[in-house]
Amino acid sequence: MDRMTPLKPIPSLIAIAITLIIWFVIPVPQNVTPNAWHLLALFVGTIAAIIGKAMPIGAISIVAIALVALTGVTNPGKPGAALNDALSGFSNQLIWLIGISIMVSLSLSKTGLGARIGYYFISLFGKSTLGIAYALALAETTLAPVTPSNTARGGGIIHPVMRSIADSFDSKPEPGSTEKIGRYLSLVNYNINPITSAMFITATAPNPLIVSFIMKGTDPSFELSWGMWAIAALVPAIVSLIVVPLVIYWLYPPEIKHTPNAQVFAREKLSALGPISLSEKITLAVFGLLLLLWAGIPALILGDGWSVNPTTAAFIGLSILLMTGVLSWDDLLKNKGAWDTVVWFAALVMMATFLGKLGLISWLSQSVGGAIDNLGIGWIGGTILLVLVYVYSHYFFASTTAHITAMFAAFFTAGLALGAPPALLGLILAFSSSLMMSLTHYGTGTAPIIFGSGYVSLGEWWKTGFILSVVNLIIWITVGGLWWKWLGYW
Image (cartoon, rainbow, N blue to C red; front, side):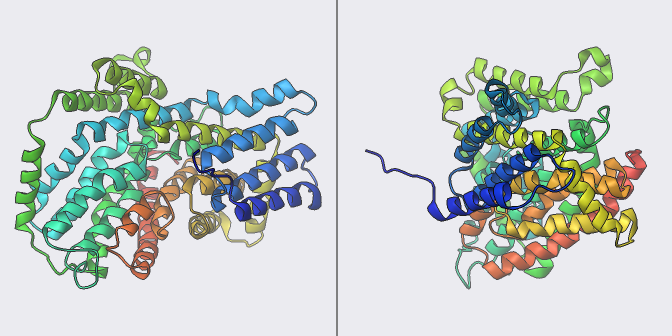
């Protein structure tokens, strides 16, 4: 019999206690309905369980769905309607966009195309350690639009390439050796991951959740499309991708600065991979098609009648990979990450949606906005304060999804109440949701993989993360703000 893995007692008891205290002990505030307050209790308890890792996030989400249906907080006295509400998240298109895109990205590792792209850029730019850093950044950026798992991209594809380069220069994860080149490349490997995650809606799993929150918090006609997001991120992302390797180079300069052998090593790896295979060519073609459809190119050239819904496009891409045999149905069934993402996204989106419908988010945002407004610092100062609190509270989160779900909607609507332009506020908070990953060694799934390889000490990791968080926020608020102003977004 397999070993039983029940919920963890202490995190579970803490989550239950928090839920019961909010539900039964704390009085329902004025202008808040009991149903909204009780749903908040379930929501906060769910987030506490996720943070404490009482169970895997998908399992916690199943419990949350069951509790919403059982308590009937969204539809009192109507069990069937309450169950429909609890399951409503599964009909959200953005959830399936990410789930299907994760399945599509499986072809990168199965065909070897991801590693080929990484070694290809190093073969071009690997004459120096700084050149290798920029090669890793280019490889990450190339893969980002079609890899919704930043963990799979940074930790599963780019990190093995980075480690093989470090090993080729005899830079091991141990004192006296990691300083040669491994520490520097490891820090670059990780800290470009938050930047590429901010560049596209499909570059990390929580981004569609952010789109959903922004659309719900603004005029129904406002839609943050895949193309609009990518264009908005383009200029500040390029600046960050140029600056970040330089800042790390200044903080922890590698002992080995010239690496002519890296290009030879990368070419040897490419030679070992052999000629590009048919499956890789099909994967490249599918990714090219998806980028064209997500960017709205057919509609731009041929008219609105040729527009394709982003989620529909993802299904088309996956269908091609299945029909050509690049991926099999068994591959998809074994891809636990994709199905897990669909389940926990459905639960969190459902709860967040009904918190909005029941008026809780509006009440909370007005309270936060009112408190900031009393400081008399205007919407610019208020927006900066909101962003700083939002970003640096990530020290208390081990999940960007939990952080975004808990705080994004309330902080966005609070900023709107202060008078901040919706697009400006939404974009700053959206991009900050990825940039804040740099802070800790547990801030996102990529962090434990790269930190766990042992090239960087805890102190070096946290110091670099904090400095780069400041650098990136300055770039994205100033350069980004001016870029979005020029684009006419605000």
